[in-house]
Picture 1 (cartoon, rainbow, N blue to C red):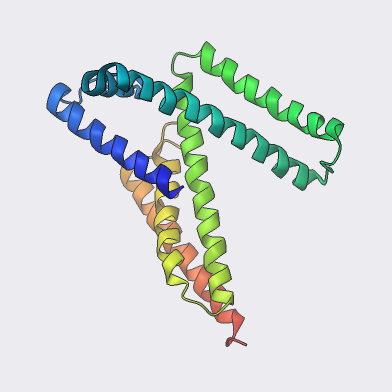
Picture 2 (cartoon, rainbow, N blue to C red):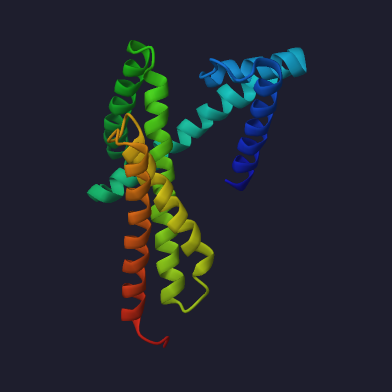
Length: 204
């Protein structure tokens, strides 16, 4: 995931430079257009091949991993043993049906991909919030330095809460109100953590 983050930063830097210098950044909202323009203009045929590998092949493998993980999570939640092929196919069928429904929505709506992608992005970041808080609690319970994850947990709490409030696919609230709600979420979660930590007592 660190490598994935580095790749994302490289693409963000390239897109920022390219569309500021060549296009002025006007009217560009489709990620596929950005990828095509950068790779084709800078790298030619080789760039096109890299784009296919990076934008098509990589997401396919990511989707395979995501669907497999979803099957295992659902099976664990429902206590469905995954030892037999029939039970694995049963759980997979439900997940595939939901996935196919999302794909049809993506094809039926011109803006479908962007909407689905925004929901996915928010859910992905929300997962990082839960993970950071869980690790913070573990470190605090173990008597270790929990600030290394507490600060990112507070920051991501603010980011996800603010986005959920301000985004059109969320609550669509005003910018200032969303910022206040995000700040309030940070204060509330931070205070709740301190109260919980105080209840742990001295380290054994």
